[in-house]
Length: 116
Image (cartoon, rainbow, N blue to C red; front, side, top):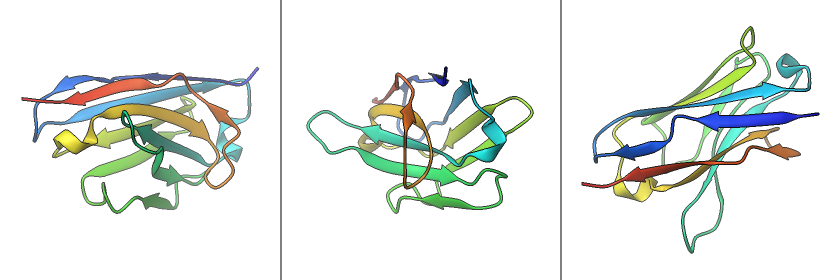
C-alpha cells in the first residue's frame, strides 16, 4: 500500500530554516514525480513545489521561489523540502504528495509554524 510519511515540521522564528522529509513506500518511488503542497487555516491549498522522478526538473510557487528547495534521494525513497528565510506567511500544514499535476496519494501533513 502506498504510504507517505512527513516529518520535520515545528516552530521556527522568522528568517529561520526548516527541512521537511517525506519517506515513501509501497510503490516504485523513482518512477513518480513528487511534490509538496501547503494549507493555512482559512486559505486554499497551495502547490508549493514539484520535482520530476529523476530530480532533473523542479518547479516552485512564486511565493516560495528562491527560498525553498525541493530535492529527492531515490536510494532512500525520500523527498525533501528545504525551507530558508521563513516568513510568518509560510505557516501552514505541509503535505507531501505523489505526482505533480495529477496527485493521487497524500501524506498526513506536518505543521510548520513561523512565529516570533
